[in-house]
Image (cartoon, rainbow, N blue to C red; front, side):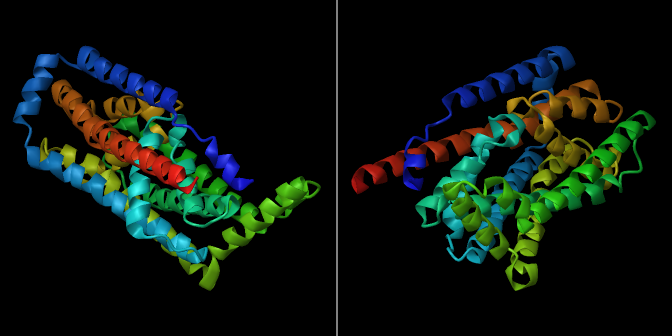
Length: 333
């Protein structure tokens, strides 16, 4: 029954095309409306390339950290999966995340990997959802610390930042409430209690989800800390890129805080990859810090480091995995 649910899984080509289309439109807007393309090309030629490679290194390193997060949780669930397999799959899942609305497209691929490695669909779903909760709580912790440390900001940005702080506080409370609700599971059991198959699925799901909190919650706490580190490393990409323009123009906290804001923006955008949302935040926060041509150049570099190149790499890995799994399934048949 569970196996049949996955046999019909298809590559989301439409989502991929929409993601590329929105990304291209956003890049065109940056080139045409924000600065003269020739000025951006000059800035790109003069930009110290070391900082761009540091940004790429931060992105690649964050993938490895994320693989360790999921490795911890598969151990807690009793079906350990290798770090390399998880990291490889998460790179492909990141590709799907970047091309789908609200950055939500990568989870099914990870569920599918765990299913292939011996977990039931319910177990795999519990691990992925638990890992998502842990990672988002890590993000909430990081963003709260960074955003409340940003004091040297323009007055017109201060009000905007205030709304972000309040919004993220509400988001964190909602996350904690969801973790408690899913852990307790009484309301979920009441909802599906009269449906035998659904009830069995929920029991399996809850047993696995609760297993993530074994050893006094060390597994889940470890995943939360790893999620914190993942986002801290990943968002340092924007920090490195801003540093490449002029270290003395703004404080370390401001540069890192801007990179966190840029990272948060795509998470709430209905447009694949957060196209437009991140650019708007960058313009609104940095317009008084960087000249227009440098601001446009930063957006191009940032998008290249955290969006375009990960899409290319993730797309190649995703294609490889799809072909490999298809070949394995034919051999099994």
